[in-house]
Length: 398
Image (cartoon, rainbow, N blue to C red; front, side):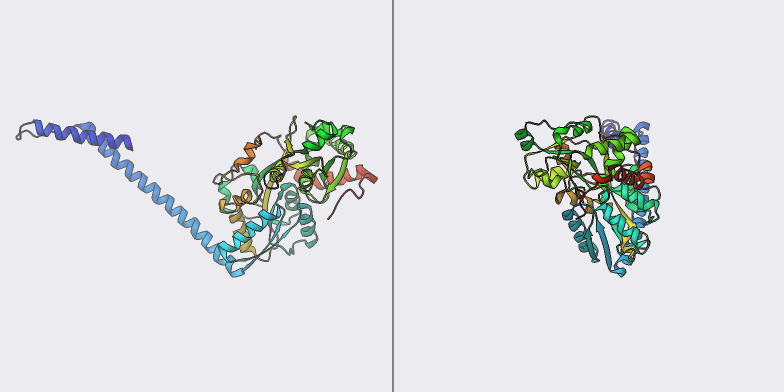
């Protein structure tokens, strides 16, 4: 456009100069190139006007649809949220939704395993409306059981890849977290022990009683660990790995973030979990003695999700929540409240601090979501059976 405008202006200047130099009785004819350029400018401007009008019309239709949804949600007046992300982020997200729409939000923080168990027991008559945060393995199980409500969200157009959503709209991703190790460097130095650099290192007897992991029955993080080991080593070898690892585990916490919260104090020396939880402990709680380790032969990742429960009592408020959760208004609250996961929306600002710690959202193994969706409950049962009497009071449920 600028080039064509410049050509038109140049042509006009040439005409002006020619008119001044020629006799009055012989007016100069307009050069063809300038006339053509001016015509192209007009045509291009007209095309842009049509495109802009079409875009505005589409945006208006989209906004109109959401306006209707907002009105219907406000009529319902209430939303019940079960959150499996960290408490501070959950509270901020729920409070902001209430501020935006004037809809009362009741929320409760539960691990993904607890939410899964709860909606399985309620079986289509849920006490909650939506699920927010936590890794997708339990979401996929709930999807297979028909406990999540499909919804085609408008804001899903901002997801950076289809891998961050269920094909039928039963859940949508909002963030991505990398699985790894968090270690207390001071404690390891005091003991004269090197930090583990890979999964196999964790089996070394020198780490006996020093490692914390989360409970396979209650934490989505632990379910992801099971699936990761089976996908990495094969079914039998993966389960055997977890049996061998158990010899060095001191505690299995109820929540996936449990190990990270105890590394800085030294109660846990090596914690297995999501590395963004380690960043929270370093940045927000001042534990500079924590080091983050990405396993050298590769690791997997979580997709933190959100979904509507089948049979939700406030279906329109639930749909509005999904639209909100898939917007910068919601997901950018994470970093403001101590949750430094990578975001999976193309219009949201990434937390710069995650990259500063050397985390790369693309430096992960290819994860088989379909296998996890079909087999996670079976794998959990097989691991617990393989552990036998070793599945003792180290497995925390509170």
